[in-house]
Length: 448
Image (cartoon, rainbow, N blue to C red; front, side, top):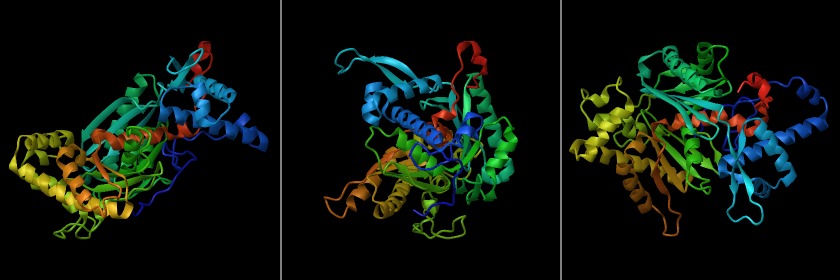
């Protein structure tokens, strides 16, 4: 896929292992600044940070483990693991859990598991017809979620971002009431983004070009707000799908998300690759004009607006942008389940055009798994089987690896979820960015 224009800030790596902006540590001061002048001490500090991150990521990916199992899995000496686990406990990032009695010989070992209940990341997704704000704690549990219908193309970028800031501010207040500390906010948007400047380079369906979105949000949220990042919605959604995939053997997938536009991103070798607006591949059979200025773009055939137009008259409630998208799609799903001929015909046409584009992606990328997100996932039971049939029929030989098509189970908020995960990414790369909790008598001094 042609990558969108983007960059990185900070030194954190995302949960996928790629370099990505995260909640980076503050500039070195005090002892850290002194160590910067002594290479040997700095190397030891760097190694410790690396090993802390290795343990924390392993617990995130593999679940509770005993110290012995952590040592075996990571290759770190048992004594080192014990010291590092104690450090992570002091920072409130892990805690001791149940005894590991299964398969143990001799005295059972105490399990270690993620904690981080006082820490959260916030994802704020802006789509053409909605904004969603979602907060996750370190264990990936949703601690806050809110959604608002919004006709983004009808607003200026500044006005739309003001609405986003308002919903994010509500989220910050909600997590503060839970005594949680937000590590960062990730604005998730369509189009090409430049993460280094926090800008949306171009979002065709919004009518945005060169919008300094992160700066606008920071100003509106105030000086006490957490760091603000900007990310492409397809990349964020792909990350959320990858981390939610059952089992630990899913290392390759292509994520395709449907909205007014159509975006895509890949996971390869367990690493998140750059996403792009794949909806602008020339695949529309009728060669209709696209808002991007070209004709025949795939999203003209499979984008949300095309589906709505095929499924209902312009005066129908499902076209009303003041109504939440989830409600409108729910209405259409009910009609399909009830056997409404027009809705079923629209879904059949969508399935054919969707399968056409997916077959091109398979020919180019050859992934073992394609996950459908956005509004495609809502109608998964009407789209997955036809798409799977087309891809199976196009296999060059019976021995060719079968591409499995699946619908996302994370709902319409999966891109916001990915944004929240990205906001937490820096903690998994460098857990030492979280301060050690003080003794109980001085607990008010700990900011988390």
